[in-house]
View: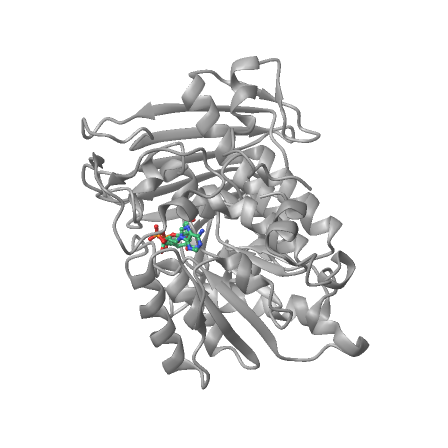
Length: 441
Ligand SMILES: NC(=O)c1ccc[n+]([C@@H]2O[C@H](COP(=O)([O-])OP(=O)(O)OC[C@H]3O[C@@H](n4cnc5c(N)ncnc54)[C@H](O)[C@@H]3O)[C@@H](O)[C@H]2O)c1
């Protein structure tokens, strides 16, 4: 929703709370940063529940609100967080109401993808910092708007690509920069799983769900059984497919390691090969992304056959002219010379055995990432996965999906990541919104 409209509708204007006051960072009241950071967590069925726990466990951080349009998930999370921290958080269905509380410093967003950028923009406009789950946005236009909002309101916006805070991965990238495998020109990335078929059936909206608010910025569609929770991922109206659901993580590590920004060409092949069901997004997909520096990233996604690559269900391999680096999805990595001999083995014991589990994958990394977010607020500095970094990585995979949906290789402007000379593909740069919900900065 447009901020002005919300402020009007929510009665903020009537309450005499001016915009400049809203834009004041709460943690810098009295000119001195106070240490305690108060957050509201929105979307707690699964990922948000685990993030709420991470925030509640941080020192000098309080989860003051749990927000969800599923009253069952909200109640469960309130109880759980109440057991972790001394104070039980309040339940508030509409996160915008929680943000009216001047004591709240930040919003944590783990709602479905169609909500990520619109909620980020609303929160920034209401003077809050944001931890927003990946992908930063549902489409590239929203990603650019989210950055604009973060800059306009001078807010810290961290995307939940927790690998950016992994100590092992930070060391790996520093090894790459120091030339451990020479000139690195290619990164191969992958994710595999064994998901089943999904069918969405007409049904009445369950009594525990506010479907209107679940849809939020997305144009209205009838409720379907099977959509809520999680399986919205496989319909373009709300989701972004496996490519953004999981590919965003490793493509981000690949872009970071290669030291590249915007590409010149992107192409993608694949389809819904494993099942004939209601999925719109592919279950089998490759995305190839080429950069001006003569470097490339390849992503392979297999949603319905979890045969591992290099014994890992997700990962990144960097190829250089003096050697190779393998990162099996977590915080560990191994460096090989050109003869295939191990020259460095950096193991993180806390890496879980099976990184396919999307809720807990890299959770040790998420703890570090949450800590980095709070530290960035306290010290007013850019976080490890600032929204600009998050956007550039999210964009690569979004362009992959646009290539797949149009069946065309895309030429990209390496100055800003925009699609060149292709009206059909350019139509997928943004989306339509439910009336009154168009995000504006
Ligand atoms: N960083 C990671 O490793 C990681 C892992 C898992 C999921 N995620 C991301 O987290 C997000 C959530 O994933 P999930 O698996 O928990 O999805 P989910 O569908 O299980 O949960 C989403 C929750 O958001 C709630 N919700 C929807 N609209 C809302 C609104 N307006 N206000 C408050 N709550 C609302 C839903 O009711 C639900 O409880 C996704 O975008 C996903 O990509 C990231």
